Image (cartoon, rainbow, N blue to C red; front, side, top):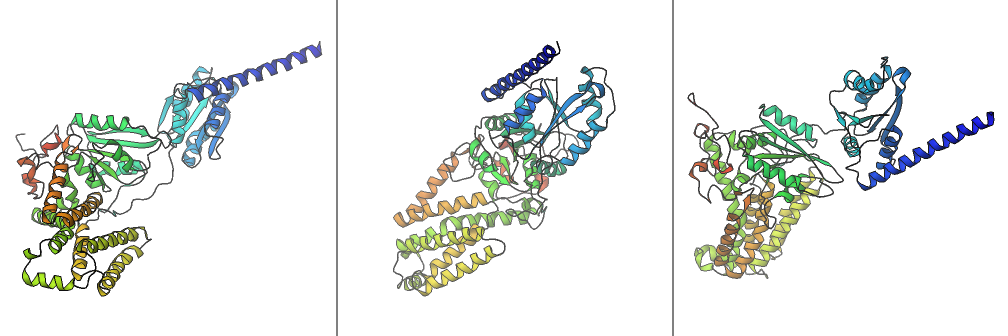
Length: 528
């Protein structure tokens, strides 16, 4: 009889193990086929093994089980990623309260409510029912709590990865105004915007983009100011993105812009929180991407790329003067080398006699055509500029300046180029730096070579033809259904007050109408 009882217990244990193995195999098969639809299992061991397999038994995955509940001995599992979660928070506000709690629930049905309401002390908790929700939460730095016998879990907010401190702006430096730049951690960037925009109407919609990177993306707008149709269009385009990874906001910019076959940026990127707030107040939408300090602004028009945040901090006369200077620099950066090629090749008679003779004398020993020497110098400067960016620390600007002087002087001394072309290329390079936006400046640098080729082929006629084609291309561009050349094409006299000329603040009582803001008035009188 004793042997029969022993054999029965052995058989019962084997059946239990076989049933456990079959359950794990079935659950794992479900996960592999349709992980989005699989609900959490009531068997804690199955859930814990499935999570470990999903992360490939990764060394930084912390999966701990413990018994809780006194006589009931409820088994609980805690899962999080070591480098993404705040381990002090997990230890002090999740694990320690569970281990030190001495409550005695009367039945298992009370355990879940006891833990979620009275024991876990973290500020952010959320119930989940699907396996994919647990995986996504762990990847975001949160902690997942699972309990045997329950087909649901608890996500505990425990994000605590290492974040870079707030730094100064690099690409959009100003003399007057804030020196803070947005952060690579999206939560810190959002807090910097919230600190400047204390408006309860600020709306934030979160997305997770990238099948593998699962990058956090936030779309910000002010309800009652931004046009609802425009906001919905931005959200729809982001939701439609299907890609395995998003590493920088440039991915989002290229995937949602209206047209890809254009050298001009259709969305503005900025690293300044004050600039983001200024655009939100105009009725635009801001897009923050986790992992990059650059926010995207939509929609965008051409003139805003030549405006600096500092224009609104200085008096209107100074701001207008600086905008005109930037516009002049745009024409110099785009057209000066082309004008040199056209006059030197086709139209020397249009120059003053003394100047034409001096330029011809300087070019007498140069073996190359004006087009070739201009192209050679421009390419050399572009290479130096790119090299100076890639060099570390203070070496970059030094190499750029010294390299340009040495190469230019050596080329003139060797008779390879004329002194006039060195002056032209130098003025062109300096003018291209006057643009406060890098994306717009590099577009002009690219188009410069096309205009130079047209000038070498047809002279001034080629330059005019190139300008006409560029303008025709810009006029047909749209940024989220907003004309790119507004308020000039189509002409809107009301919005001209903040284009090339900035009028005093007391005259800008309304927001730009080209963005179709719901609330047009920026400043209200006593009777409003």
